[in-house]
Length: 103
Image (cartoon, rainbow, N blue to C red):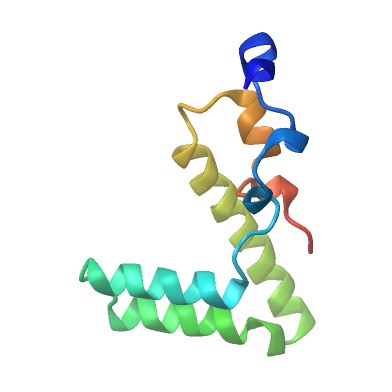
């Protein structure tokens, strides 16, 4: 914690272990579906988009690349909006930052 006071950010080594191990994709997807349903916005349209995301790996390569590029752009925009008031160094190291995702 003292490191944050001195430098403005906490080194990765001092972060809790859970920061390095995000939830499995299946669990995250189910949580998103549940969240949408709880807020009453799980429409047929949203359900079909989620279904398209889930079946994306079986698309042909060209279609999948288009989908992946668009999805990454949307994820970056969403991340930037969600972390607009966060410290710059924290956003760089965040596992939620699309720039830190592995393909």
